[in-house]
Image 1: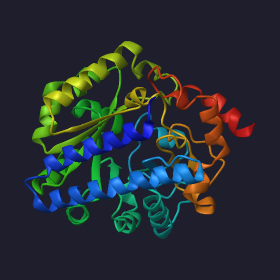
Image 2 (image 1 turned 45 degrees about the vertical axis):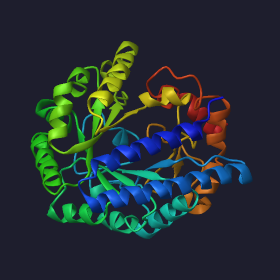
Image 3 (image 1 turned 60 degrees about the horizontal axis):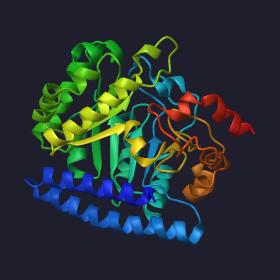
Image 4 (image 1 turned 90 degrees about the vertical axis):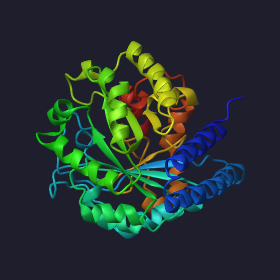
Amino acid sequence: MFDLQDYMSNNISNMMLTGYKNMLKNPREARFMLKMQQTFKKSERRRRQTAEEEGFEVPPFLISSISNSCNLQCKGCYARKNGITDDPGASTRPTLSADQWKHIFEEAAAIGINFSLLVGGEPMMRRDVLDKVAEVKDMIFPVFTNGTLISPVSIDFFRKNLNMVPVISLEGDLLGTDSRRGKGVFERVQRSMAMLHEEDIFYGVSITVTSENLHQVVGDEFVQQLRQQGCRLIFYVEYVPIDAGSEHLALTEAQLEEQDHINDHLRELFPDIIFLSFPGDEKYMEGCLAAGRGFFHIGPDGAAEPCPFSPFSDSNVVTLGLKGALKSPLFRKLRDVRLVGGEHHGGCALYEHRDEVERLLHQ
C-alpha cells in the first residue's frame, strides 16, 4: 500500500543529501545541512504522532504569500489574477505582520512542517518578514523572488541565514524572460545570480515551463550554463493558463510525458543539482498534494487556501492556528471527492476544476 508520508520523507532525505554534497566544500554550510537532516527526522516523527493521536495528517511543507505587492507586472501572473498581489501600495488585501508570520512558522515547526516556500507578490519587498522568520531555525524557507531586488545587503542576509534559500525566477533566455517579465529584467537577474555565485551562496531558479520554451529550459546546455553560474536547485513550474487566450502555452499531454522523461535524464546527468517539478511530480504521489494532503497555501491575510492556483478559503491560520486550518471543511471535501489525492493526468487539477472547488466551498 502506498504511504505518502514515507514517500515524501524519503524524497526530503534525498534532497537534503544532495544539498549536503553540494555544500561539502563549505564546512559551515555542511554542518547546517547535517543539523537540518536530524531536525527533519524529528519532524517526521511529530507528523506521524499527530496523525495517530489527533486523526489528521500534517503536511511536510507550506506555500506562504508573505507579500501582496510586486515591482513587476509579469504576463500571466496567477498572483495578480487571483487578487493576491498588486502594484506597491495599490493592494486592498490586508497582510499579516512580521510577528504574526513568525508565530505561524513557529507553530509549523512545532508540529513537524519542514519547509515553507515564501512567495508573493515579491517576498523581497517584505524584508521585515524575512528578518523575523529567519529566526525560525527548524525550518528551511525557499524565497521565490523575481531577483531584481537582490543587493549586497540581501547577499549578507542570505550568507548569515542559511535556512533562507533564494530561488530566482527565469523564463529561459533573455528573450523569454524579458518578453514575460519586462525589458532589462534578464540582465538584472544575471547580476543577482553572479553575486550569489561569487559569495558561494546556495541558491536555485524557478522556471515556468510552457509549450514554447520546454525544449530550451530542459536542455542539457541550458542546465549546464545554470550549473556553471552556481545554481544548485531547479524548480520547473508547469504553466497554468490564467489569462484567456494563453491556453496554447500550457503543456500538452505528450509534452508533459516528454518533460517527465527529460527530468529523469537531467537528474542522472547532473547529480549535484536538485530538480523539482510542479505539479508534474504529483503523479508519483497518487495525485494532487494541495488542501493539506502535502501542503496548503497561506494568503497574505492568513487565509488557508488549497493552493495558490485555487484561492478559495473557509478558514484562517491567525484565528484557528495551523491545526485548525488543516481541519478545514473545504480541504476535507476536496479530499473526499478525490480532487486532491485522485487520479493524476498532469496539469493543475484544482485549476481545471475551479468551478467545482467554488461550489464545494459554498455547499
